[in-house]
Image (cartoon, rainbow, N blue to C red):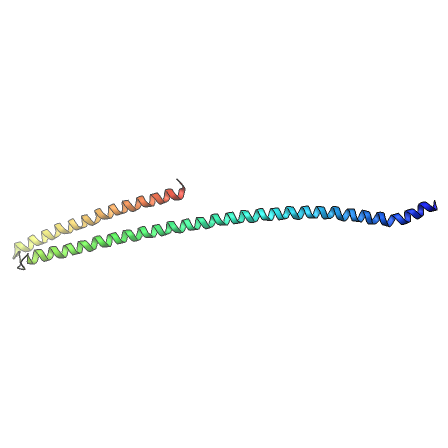
Length: 158
């Protein structure tokens, strides 16, 4: 029995060290698995965030393009209106010069009848000029509206 006790005394620290080593090794494997899983999950999250960020950047770019096109359209409308009004003023001025002084520089219509005739003619011309302005304005607005409809469909992806 002494031999068994001696062997037990000798083997007991070795068995304890062996059990501790197996426990540490098992724990290390579990920790390595958890770290690997955590790394994989982190990488997946990073990839998802990058994709989301790219989509957001593209959306912002698309919105900026639409805003630019809208602003260009607004400026185009104003430019068209300005050019039309400018042409009308030049026409009125030329008509006024022709009515007042004629082709050779001498006054055309003199007296009360001439004044009445000029006022009536001026009113007719004003209506003509206003009508021309609004017709062009309507056409421009319809054209720009169609451009905005196209942009809207592009944004919807249709």
